[in-house]
Structure formats: C-alpha cells, structure tokens
Amino acid sequence: MSIDYLNKLARLRTDKNRNRWTEATTFRAPHKPFLLLSVMDIAAQSELTSPFIEPTFDLIERFARYWSLIMPVGTTGNMAYPFFHMQSEGFWKLVPKPGMENEIKDRITSSVTRLKSIVVGAEIDQELFLLFSEHKTREELRAVVLHTYFSPEIRQKLLLEASENQEAFEYSQKLLKAAEKIMSYGSEKPASIRDQGFRKAVMTLYAHRCALCGIRMLTPEGHTIVEAAHIRPWSDTNDDRPANGMALCRLCHWSFDRGFMSVGRQYEVLISPLSRQEQNNPGPIMTLEQRPIFRPSDEKHIPDQECLGWHRKEVFRK
Ligand SMILES: [Zn+2]
Image (cartoon, rainbow, N blue to C red; front, side, top):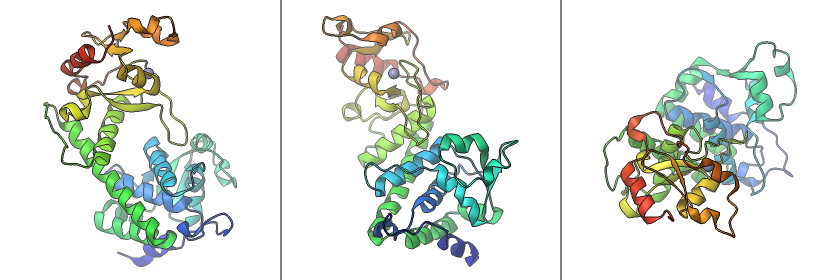
C-alpha cells in the first residue's frame, strides 16, 4: 500500500497533555484513534459501502465500547469530538447539512446531538476508503493505529475486542439467516461471542424497541434501554435463534424473567395476577395487558410459539 496513509494515521493531531492522558494511550488523547478503529470495524462488517461515514448508532456504540474498555470508569468519551475534529487531518471532510456551512467552521462541537444537527456525515478520500475495504490493508492500518497510540498491553485488548466484535457480527449474520430450528446452534462458541452475536441479531430485528411495551430510548453516547432476552434460556436448549428471543427494556426483561409478564397465543401481552397483589404497584405495566407485542416484520424471526408456550407454562405466574 502507499505509505502515505500509514504515515497519515501515524501522525494524527491529538491532545498531548501528560496530566490528562496516561501511558496506556501514550500520553495522548485517544479520541481520534478510537474513532478510526470503530470505522474500521464497520468496514470489516462490509457496512461501509461508499467513502461516506455517517454518525450512526452502530459507530457511536463501537466508539463507546472501545472507550469503556480502556479508559477509567466514570469517564465518557464523546464521539462527536473526534468526528468533528478529524477534519483537520485532510482525509476527512465534513459534509454540512444545508445552511450549516458556517457551523462546521466552529471550534467546538460539544455533543452528538449537536453534531447530527449540523453534519450529514464525513467524506473520506476514495483511496483510504479502498484501503479500509480490503482486509489486508485495513489490518495494516489498524496495526499502525494500535502501535502509535497505545501501550503494548492495551494493544492486545483492543485487537481482541475488534476480532471478537467481528466474530459476534458473523455469528449474528448466521442467526439472521437460520430459519429452521437448530438446537445447540453456536454451542461451540465462547459465551461472550454468542451473547454479543445474539444481541446484535435481536437489536437488528427490533431496532432497539421493546417487544412488550414498545419503548425505544437511545442516548447520544451509544447506550440503549433494551436488552436481548432469550425466551427459553440458552442453557436449557442451546437455542440462539432470534425466534427464541425478543428485545426487552430492563423493566419488561425483569418482569418477563420473573413471570410477571408473558406473551399469549395471539401475541398479546399477558400480565400476571400477581402484579395486582397487595404489595405490588405495577403502574403503567397494567396498560399493556392484551395489547399486541411489537414483532419483527420477517416471519421467520417472530417469537416461536413453542418457546412462548414453554414460558407460559414454566415461568408465567398464573
Ligand atoms: Zn418494555
């Protein structure tokens, strides 16, 4: 590959403040390196189809994941910051929304919400796009970023994170294709990969919406209220099909797992009479009773009545 981009990625303009940044990130701000690693992960999933990068939830989530893996607990990385300031690198050109041409010349873009209100995304050089798209060259660029901006132990962690994410992504793609019931699907995989892959598949199908109450809440920092829940526990039947799962918000997940809620034969929400007992005050949950659940449009991924039947019989408190 032309050493041009290897050099460019090795010479990012980053904040060098020894009081603020530690040896782990070679005494430099890790924002731009984390963003580039996130972009490369998206490219590895063949989801970068043109030299145009959008501040999608997936990208924000990848950035947040790298940040929380390496940086001290309690600090939050803001992806808006490097997304905006990467424009000083030459290969990254912000594309403003109509009428926002002057805003992108501002010095500071404080939040993802603000970023999304002024830019559509960023255009990268065609050549860099091609380098990101090819496995071999992308991994060479990744190695340069890891070597330049992170200490040796941290490099290993970041490399492992990238490869686990890729494996989980591939597993999720496999799950999304699997129509028929396959027991022990994925049992040969480490639990962390399986969990992440199952989660990715369910999140794709439900678009971060809770199947039971319909709530959808995402923070600009890449956090979501919903979790991927198995209807029948994986440990019972090793069934990771999305049809043995639903996206559930924390409240519904807890209530479902403890038998306060279930799903009926017509895909209606069932509420246990236990919810109404004296010490309980289920509040808004009662309004969901008999309402249709939110389900994926693709037939084959709709919750399996066999699994739901098991839940009604074994978990739900009648
Ligand atoms: Zn819910």
